[in-house]
Image 1 (cartoon, rainbow, N blue to C red):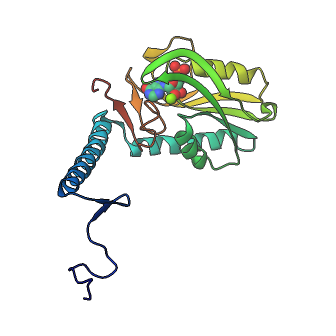
Image 2 (spheres, rainbow, N blue to C red; image 1 turned 45 degrees about the vertical axis):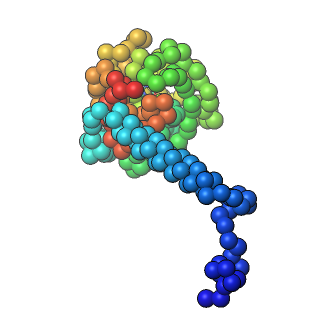
Image 3 (cartoon, rainbow, N blue to C red; image 1 turned 60 degrees about the vertical axis):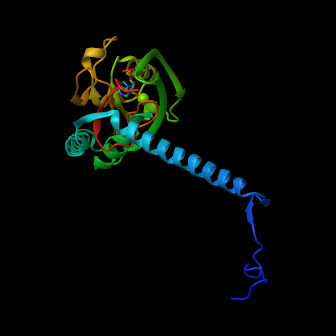
Length: 230
Ligand code: IMP
Ligand code: MG
């Protein structure tokens, strides 16, 4: 290979460059290398720590993917049989119910329409704020529909109590509530769903749409959340 006469291939100037600046001393190069190694090492460690930490909070599978699938298929069939020929509006309370809604509507074999509203009752981690806020209303005239509210979990009952009151005041042809989960021990208002696919103990759960601080919604199963870990 041709060179400049000083051992450096032509077109490549000698020396070590960092951000366009030629480093003058060997010490500079050593400091730079050490800095890069330390920074990169730290980042890699952080990433590993995060996913490890994420997994540590999943205490164990409470309801498997298969169990959910079978229960949702049955609920879809029951709705299809009961509402055949009627105008159905499935109303999902975001965000927790989005996965359940997606699977349930595909298990329904008769025509149905889908609407969303957003209600928030959990504001931080596993602690209920005790206040329900409707942050996005339904864009439908429910008086033309048999409404089925599709909710992820019935916990204190405050959210569904408020949502049901609000929608009933708009005179739907009929109104029923289906929830994936029910935690009866936690109830603070007198509310019963028409259908709940699974009844669970007083445990904070994650997955299949349910979150803890917005994470874990994408788990395909329901798991217990381990809050005893930092
Ligand atoms: P409620 O108004 O207390 O019945 O709470 C309903 C809402 O709280 C649900 O729609 C969920 O978004 C949330 N929630 C209640 N329990 C849990 C849980 O165990 N894990 C995750 N979210 C929960
Ligand atoms: Mg939630």
